[in-house]
Length: 393
Image (cartoon, rainbow, N blue to C red; front, side):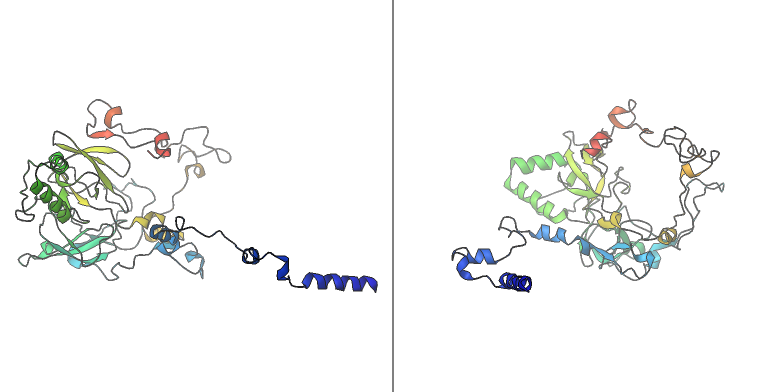
């Protein structure tokens, strides 16, 4: 009985609330408040950029896993994409080959099937000048980037000159106005500036930097503010250094062929002194010389989150026309250089393709300074490989 009374007394003493006389008055509030995290100082508080980056989960659409196929499904959020069908006049039917050539032999493995598609005729030339209105941004099943339907404001044109598809750049939305200055800057667009083939990027930079004439400097500033906008097409000679570009042409009369996949971009590095070439850094990190009369589109290619998507199940890959890809070690020796043997073994061979080509580290093309003499003089610096790539150069 005495032990029971002793236990009850001890419990009562533990449950008795703390009296305020035990704590000094200055430290009363600090002792009673329990802090779970250190308060951020004004210098440590998140900025708008950090706040946007902290909401990365809202950049993708995920689904409640009511079925196994959508448990890992993740799609980029693109509420601005038009939900209807494309313009029929600007599409042609896609006839699939299943990865086979004209002889019926498989040249590309793991291809076949997939949903029916229509090819969107995308204008990579951008010859038509004048303002064009962006009508809508559409999904294109044949590429990773989005495309934009634009309308020419000229009432005298019709057909494909009136409507056209272009590669949408990041931030381009319905209602924006874009222009193509492939033929040069028209007279009277900017007061005090007259375009000519003799005007090169280095000359513009010299005039802007030396401030030889206040009027010339002002005209150049107005020109860049008027023309260097996302979606506009300009010759490289009129694009200032450091500008982000895409859809770069290698022929002054040709279409844009470089930097066209989702989220990719190039950058104008420097205009050479001779006024003939401009050095451009491509998405791979390669620095290449391009003629200054070639054109490029300002901005970054749209849909940068495409590479972070997750299909969720094998069936979606089949909808895209991708068939299963069998590993070489799972084949017989007659079917692949890695095949055969007991267990998982490549028979101490270097990794090779099904045709016997070395696949990891073997260089099959030697452009630029390290290649044969005169192989590719346009490459100033090759793309980083190996240690350079791991270092992020």
